Every structure is written in C-alpha cells, then in structure tokens.
Image 1 (tube, helix red, strand yellow):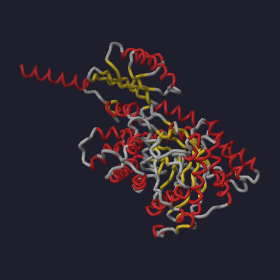
Image 2 (cartoon, each protein chain N blue to C red; image 1 turned 90 degrees about the vertical axis):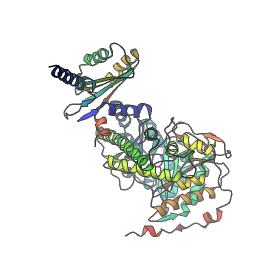
Image 3 (cartoon, rainbow over the protein chains, first blue to last red; image 1 turned 180 degrees about the vertical axis):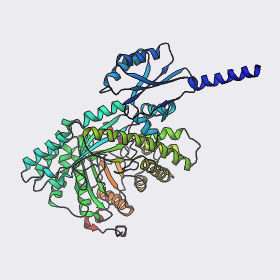
Image 4 (tube, rainbow over the protein chains, first blue to last red; image 1 turned 120 degrees about the vertical axis):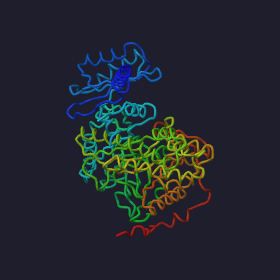
Amino acid sequence: MIFVRYSIAYLRLDVIQSFFIFKNTIEVTSMEQKRAIVSVIGKDQVGIIAKVTTVLAENNINVLDISQTILQDFFTMMMLVDVSELDDLDLLHEKFEETSKELSLKINIQLEDIFQAMHRV
Amino acid sequence: MNIAFAEIQETIRMVQMESLDIRTVTMGINLRDCADSDFSKLNKRVYEKITGYASNLKSVAEQVEKEYGIPIINKRISITPIAEILGNATKEEAIELAKTLDRAAKELGVDFIGGYSALVHKGISKGDQVLLDALPEALSVTERVCASISVATTRTGINMDAVRQMGEIIKNAAELTKDQNGIACAKLVVFCNPVEDNPFMAGAFHGAGEGEVVLNVGVSGPGVVLNALKRYPDADLGQVSDVIKKTTFKITRAGELLGRVVAERLGVPFGIMDLSLAPTNAMNDSVAEILEEIGLERVGTHGTIAALALMNDAVKKGGAMASSYVGGLSGAFIPVSEDNGMIRGIEEGALTLSKLEAMTCVCSVGLDMIALTGDVTPATLSAIIADEAAIGMINKKTTAVRVIPVPGKKEGEMVEFGGLLGRAPVMGVNPFSSEKLISRGGRIPAPLQALIN
C-alpha cells in the first residue's frame, strides 16, 4: 500500500514537472497565421506577466503559448502571439518600450519565421 | 515544430550582444536603357530610373528590420558600370553624372551607390577612358559614389596599361582630397576577376549578365563567430571548423530570410546571398580577433594564413548549405581600417603589408582599406595592384586593391576616415622602384589556367 501511494506521488511529480518545470519549447506549426515571439528577460519581480499580457490584450492580440523560467534570479519568458490582425509591429514596439522601462526588462517582439530559419533545416 | 527556449535566446543574444546584423541589402539596377546621345537626357533618365526603382528601398528595409528584430545596417544601390553608357560624353559630363548619382543616393537615403565603374581588363574603350579621366575629380566632389575598375581576369590576363593609369588615378584622387586624408581613394577599388552581383561596397556594380533589377544581400557576423569559438577554448581544429560552419549557417539563414522578405515587398527578384564575414570597428566585431581566438598571439604572426584559410573555408561550407543562391564575393574580408584587431596587429608590428598580401591568397578579397605613406609613387601603387591582380589571375579568384596614399602622412601615423570606414595606421612600402616594370606597358597574357575548354 505504501509502495503504491509512493508511486502515485512520484507519477504526479513527474506530470507536474513535465507540464510546468520542463516545458521549455514553444509549438510552432500553423502556416496561415502571422505569428510573433515576444521574449521578456530581466530581474524577477511581481507582475511581469500581468503587465506584458495587459499590453497584448489592449491591442487585441491573442496569446497562443507561454513558456517561462527563472534562471539565477533572472526571469525569462517566451510567448507565441497571433499578430495576423496587426498591420505593423511598430505600435507594439512602442507600447513594450514603456513597459520595459517601467520594469527595467528587455522585451523583444520578432516574427517567428526568423527562429525557424535560423534553427531548423 | 518546436522552437526551444535556448534557441530563441541564442538569436536574441546574437543580435544584442554579438553584433549580428545584415550588413547590406543592395539593389542592382540596370541603366542600359538610359543611354542617349544627348547627355542631358541621359543624366535625367539615370536619376529618374534610380530614384524610381529604389524609392521604397530604405523604408521597406527598415520595416523588415523592426519586424524580425535583426538590424539591416546599410541600404545600397549598384548600377550598370557607368563607362558602358557614357557613349560620346565628355570628361566634364562624366563628372556631372557622378554628381547626379550622388544626388540620387542622398534623395533615397542610401549610404553608397556603386557602379561608377569600367571593365578594362583587356582593353580600354572610349567611354572607359573618359571615365578613367574623370575618376579623381568625380570621387572628390561626391560623397556616396563608389567606383571600381576591373584591370585583370584569369581569362584575359592583366591589362598593364590600365594598371599604370590606376596608380596615377589613385595618387591624384588622394591629392584632391588631401584635407580629408585622401578619402576619395576609400571609394575606389581596383579588381581582378570582379563579380557581377557583389552587394558590398566599394566594389559593387550591376554586371552585364544581370537582369533589370535585383536585390542582393550581404551578411556579417564576425562577432557571432568569435563568441561561438570562445565557448570552445579547447576544441581541436576540426571542431573549430565545425563551430564556424554551424554559426555561419545560422547567420546566413537569417540573412536570406530577411533578404527574401525585403525583395518580395519591393516586388523585385531576390538575387544572391553573399557569405562574407565583414568586420566593423564595433567591439569584438573583428575577423582578426577570430584568428587570434583560433590560436594566434597576434594576427600577422606565423600561422595566420593557415587559420584564415580554415576560417574562410568553414564560412563558405556553412553558408553554402544555408542559402539556395550564393554569390558575390563570399569569403572573409580583411579590411584594415574597419577591423580593430588588424589595426592592433599593425600597431604592434605583428602584421605587415607583405603578410596582408599573402593573406589575400586564401580569402576574399584583397588589400583593403590600407593607408600608405603620402610619398608613395604612382608606379609603386601600380606595382601593388599588379601583384594583387597576379594572385587573383593565377588562383582564379577575385582580388582587389583599395589603398589610400595619405598625403603628408608618414609610416606609423594614425589617420581617421570616419564612420564605417574607420581609422588606419599608415604603412610603409618597399623603398625600391618598380618604375621599369610599369612603364613597359602592354598586357600580361592570360595564364594557362585560362585554357580550360
């Protein structure tokens, strides 16, 4: 009985790990959508995700995937977002500029094709 | 498909910390249909055609750069060699045309326009001679016009009459811009085996085999390669080659993607991707430092050529797989004034002019952005060109000479050219004369290498 319990706990931990801790890739599949990757790097603090996603929501941009880790006090987050409706990324660049100053973070937004081109044959 | 966290971070690191950039998108424009017996019509058509085709070049490139988060440093234009459309124009008219090109470049916001050129590797036509006569003044009264002259190819040999003239032209151009350290010479390249689709300045022109309009791309990225190598301090040379190959692959893919997007948005066919590693004066963005990282105490010492050959070859192998159309010069550039490592090598006495000449045997392109003493004679300049042309001719590769005999400067002094052109320590030349060789004139016959049919 103890053994069974232990194995369930072990299994759970494994599931939790695979979903939250080791989820370090972003799915890139669709061809139709125009998608971009928002990357946020900086010192960990309260409210980073809230502030960044607020900017996206205000501009009516849907988040397709999020992946986030903390490495030696450094917060890093990658988000895959749908920018099909957006004519140019300029506006978003400006908005993120404000947020990145306020939280002293580095926020980049780049069309996802560049990562595919550079890292996949 | 999964893009890993680490991969996204790698791209961002390359751009923000290791100076990855697209060095240039260069639009090639054919000007043959602008030719006219009436010079004022020709002049007007050239201006209208260039400003018409390239009107959106700068804005589109800037937009793409923002969307993909990779800087495109220069937007440039290359044109049909001007000597080919000069017809009966006079020297004064040829200078006027250079001013027109300068005006077009300023209007479009491009930093250089290349193709004030003549191909005289076998003989000099009337238009060619007019252009050669106009060169010193044309380059001194314009800012953004770049000139190139082809004086030799493997198939034709070396036109020593043209080589003799080039020595004098370079000397004159330097004199005419002596208050700016002879900067006119920084915009003049003398070629052996030039390529028709080179996107890099000052040697870009839109060759005879090219179409109406085309977009060529030159990548950069010595900083990225240097940093990649720093992560493998103990790798053997096979692994060093592999690291360079993989890094160049990524750089080239980024360049090709951006180039294609720019071309598509401009409605212009994509031409080629030039795989050259081009240094800048930015910290760590140096080809010389890559060679030092491979294992030289200072660039120029024994082993420099071996390291350079390894690097140049690895760059091509990685890039060739990454792009469907490779062209241009595709190899490592070793300009002195634009590379902090090269400058340090010369200042510390490790790197000499003879070693730089030897280095051009294993990389593109040639003696590039080298400041020479002000008292160098035209015949010596011609002889330097002849030596480089011979290396190119025999080895079936492109070589070039872009040297600046800086008026009034002596060996060891430092001269500033400003901007991308950088600064260079003045180098001395061999004190013995080559006058007799140059004054003989004529043509050095094509070598046996030319007989390949």
